[in-house]
Length: 382
Ligand SMILES: NC(=O)c1ccc[n+]([C@@H]2O[C@H](COP(=O)([O-])OP(=O)(O)OC[C@H]3O[C@@H](n4cnc5c(N)ncnc54)[C@H](O)[C@@H]3O)[C@@H](O)[C@H]2O)c1
Ligand SMILES: [Zn+2]
Ligand SMILES: [Zn+2]
Image 1 (cartoon, helix red, strand yellow):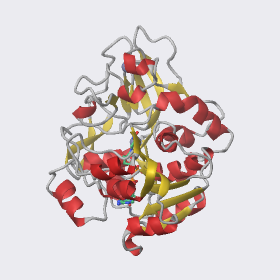
Image 2 (cartoon, rainbow, N blue to C red):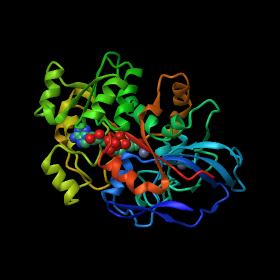
Image 3 (cartoon, protein in one colour):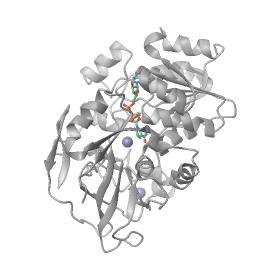
Image 4 (cartoon, rainbow, N blue to C red):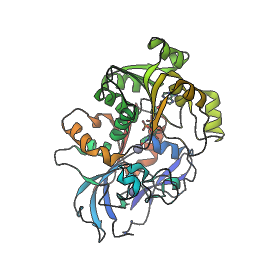
């Protein structure tokens, strides 16, 4: 079958790989119908995440048709068209029982922090991903969810990650009625977080990025105020000024380890790999949230240490909440939000690229060419 193949930093290509097989009675094999590229894939692509092994197939946001099931699979059947959450979760460990599906204790033998993730580095369990024609899906009765007949498949594929992550970013902010919410990052995740902030009662939503086309998009889509940090001097000062010098009630980091905007962070985190990425947006978020405010982090950072102004966190009494999104927990309510039109995820998809051209897709999304917001890879029709 055709599959994306990671060859080392900034090098991916399409290759022939062996068909995945059922390895456990709870597995299913899925023929992929759509597979997105995510900001999280860019951390891998750029070589920022330890133990990203050449030969891996990335892709944790996919939909597909079930073509084979293991002997213990009861809920799924061959022929079902499913959306598959990016977290691999067993559904029965102590963390899954608390609906912390992103922190499953069984699906990632390599670590005790994050659970298994499709198509990630071996810090996420080394599971092959969905940027391929076929993929093996462990615990097939837990994550995969049949796509409702009336749902557009482009909406469905964004329910595997972007929508729940943006929603959970807003949810973790503990937004109170009328709050001012600042979102750092106008990628798909930040755009969705800004849109969802209103659902929790925000009174004002501000988005910060450096890409004008994304700022234009989010200004209309969320809708919200949106500003370019390249033209505001010190972003922290700008945001203080914009909030009566008190700071925002809630800040959301939807940027993560590839943040731009600070030469020292870029050098330490992105060039020399001396810390788990550049923490520039995280710094700005800590310093521009008000005393007693909430910082919600969904941006991904490497597992090693990162320079953050922890003293300011303590002295300002900031509450920090962070996690990988718990997709399965959120799906029932988000499917309803999509069906009722409260959320319109498919508008984020700007590029549909054949799987065979996966290296072009990475180049376009990584360099933010052609006003790219979200690319989706389409495997050859069967
Ligand atoms: N926690 C989760 O469950 C989860 C799920 C999906 C994605 N993520 C993470 O969310 C983050 C965003 O993902 P995405 O797909 O939207 O990525 P993306 O690369 O499309 O978007 C990131 C945006 O941040 C902007 N940016 C860079 N530096 C900035 C700064 N200092 N301040 C403000 N904006 C800045 C970039 O210009 C870009 O538009 C990534 O770190 C990704 O790994 C987390
Ligand atoms: Zn993703
Ligand atoms: Zn579990």
